[in-house]
Length: 244
Image (cartoon, rainbow, N blue to C red; front, side):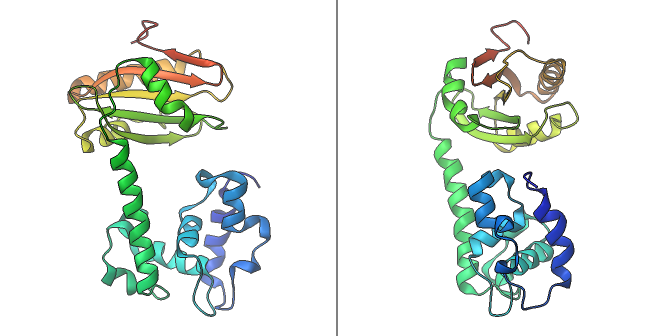
């Protein structure tokens, strides 16, 4: 199966029953995290698989995927793992000081990447948005919906992924969009999503989502100033087309 779901659907059911002798090499080669990342990209991996790659290897007699699942079971979420102290991490069987350092370092690196994005990049036009975001969405086979949070001078604060998959009103909910904007202390936001089909024209769902988010932004005092659809064949600006 090529959709990233097999591993989670199967290993999470199997892992609690696995013997201590199970190792990553007992999985079919095509289902091992490293091979799946190379084949499908990091977006296709489950949280358990990503943690397995960060940890690198398990302890004697225990697969790294078992250790990764213990972390998720103990803390309940990736955010909770990120917030955990060294003392809390090393209480998990299979996590020593070295692995706790790997975990803390990986989250700190991701945080610094976000800080680098927030360097004063001024967004003055739809073309600035496309130049910034199109490389991120190039060659994606699914629809990605992202927002750019901006300060009062239209400088970029943060780029946030909101959803992956077919874009509709039930997936792109105002609370998810504006949660990111509020946390970033944004004054305004720009919506961006891609059309893997190559067609830039907005669908009815695209128009409805835009209306809902513009209305929600007015209530919250965070203006939605643009929505851009990017594709391999160009882009469409909602503001330029008078669609918002």
